Length: 209
Image (cartoon, rainbow, N blue to C red; front, top):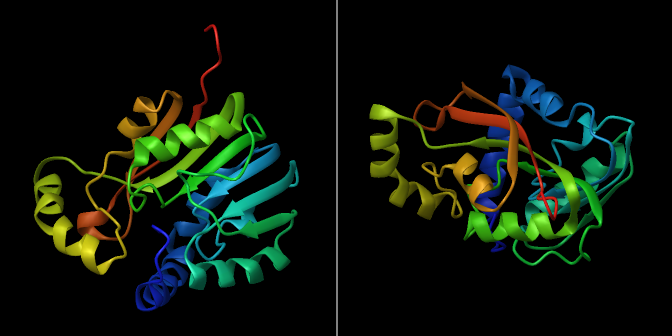
C-alpha cells in the first residue's frame, strides 16, 4: 500500500487472500519465515497474515502498515501471534528506526505497491544490521506472452488496485538496492496474469566486502 485510504480494495483483497491462503498461500508464508531469528521488521504487513507463521526463534516483530483498514486487522492478528508483534503506522521509504536495528526484514506482497521499490529497499537495508536477512515473497513480472499482457493491463490495474503494479521485477530491484541474493525460488500461483511469483532470501551489504 502507498498509505492512502483504500477501503473497498483492501476489503476485497482481504477476502481474496483468505480464499488463497488454504490453497498454497499459507505454505508460502511458512516457507518465507522458516528459521528466522532475532528482531524482525515486517514492511507492508497488510492484515497480518504472516504473524501466525513466525517461528519461536524470533524475539519480536515490528510491523509497519500505512493503510488504516489493513492496520486495524493487523492489530487483531498481532494479539493471536505466537511471538511479540508491534503494529504501527509507517512507510517503507521513511522507516522510524535507527540504523542497524534489525536482524531481518520481511517483504511480503508489498514491493508491487510502493512508489519506488529500490528506494524502499535501500531504506530497509539501512535499518538492517550488516549481513542481515531480507526475506521476500512477491508477485513479479513474467516472461513472454504473460509479460506482454502485464504491460497492457498494468495501467488500468494499478489505478483500481491501490497502486499495485503487476509487472515489476522485484528481484532486480533487490539487487539494485545493494542486497546479495542467496536463494530465489520462482513459481506460478493463482492469478493467471499475476501468477508469476518469487520467494527467497537476500542479505544486506557488509562494509568492506
